Length: 235
Image (cartoon, rainbow, N blue to C red):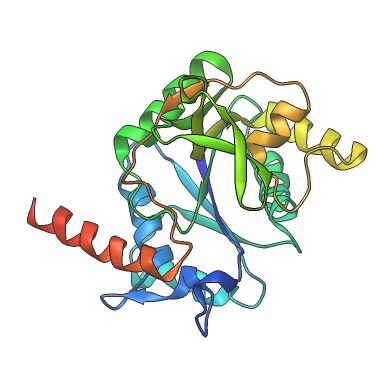
């Protein structure tokens, strides 16, 4: 089985909205609902678990009937920071699914992920035990010498951007989170599952990503999302 763990626990301070950005409505539909619909319609994904910002659980539960998200099996309360939220979801999933099943971790504020990206992450995970969505890096990266100057750059041929979705065998990622929290490795506020796994010594395997799979972080991202929605609608 493949179960999607959708992370919707953030407060979205950078968006400067009155509500968490995952619940902000675009064309009368919450951003999170757009994301859930992609997983609902994907034939390879069997179930959906949402890790939700505390106090918004009933709102997410209502999406099951409002937007016909029939695969939604549980809404889990998020933690005080990102890695704790992901672990809360993993703890539920490991107790309810087989260790050889696959969990597909994805940001709820990446609503434009498509089936090709999801399917390749799953296929890569079936072969190697994990599959992390990656995109070649096309910009130049410089290391700051001071706040306003540099004398060093990193060759971009050696760089990829790893985003979500990320697919892992449930047994493997469950043990990794247990070890990480016991040893306090890879669980800082800026950490994610992929960085934690590398810090623990795991090898990650790249699956194909897409530049359209944007993360809605800043107000200008909302305008880009609206434009891409219009393009998808017309095509």
